[in-house]
Image (tube, rainbow, N blue to C red):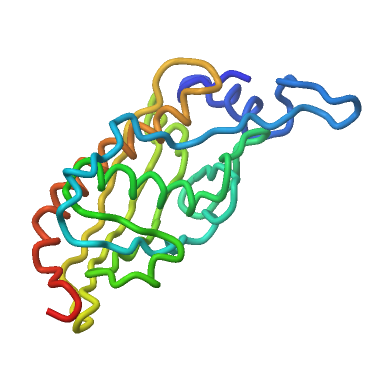
Length: 214
C-alpha cells in the first residue's frame, strides 16, 4: 500500500480510500490484515523529582463527529468524509490522544497527571479535551496533502469551578514521502508540535490551580 501526494491523487484513492491494497498479512480466507498505527511520544518519562506542580485530572476527550473509534478519518472536501481502508489506530482515538497528552505534558512541565479513575484522588484542576479535527486531508492544494489536528484544552479549578483558561491548538503538517507510514508519521509530527505549544500554555495556566482545601 503506497501513499502518494496530491499529484497522484487517483492512485491515493485506489490505494487508501477503497478496499484494494495488497495484503500485509494473510490469514486464510480472512483477507488482508489492517495496518495498525499508534501515537507515540518521543520524549522521556517524567522524573519523580520534576513532578512538583499541581495535580491535574485529564478528562476523557470529547470527539467531533466521525472521529470516535479506531478508523483513520479522511476529509474529502467540505462535507464529504471517508476513512483509510485497511488501516486503523491501535485503540480508540480518544484513548490514544489522552495517553499521549498525559505523558507529554507531565514530561514537559512539572504538573502531575492522572486519568481514568483519578477523580478518587483530590486533584487540583480538571483538564477538558475536545478533539475538533484529526483528519487526513488529501490534495488541499496542488501537490500538497496534510493532516489537520485541532485539539481544544480547557482548565477548570475544582475548588470553585472556575474556568482558568481555554485554547485550541492547531497543527497542519504536510504528508511527505512515500509509503504506508507517511500519514501516521504526519499525525505523530502534529501531536509532537501541539504538545510543545500545550506545555507552554499549561505553564502559564496551572499556577492558578489552588490545592483543594487551601
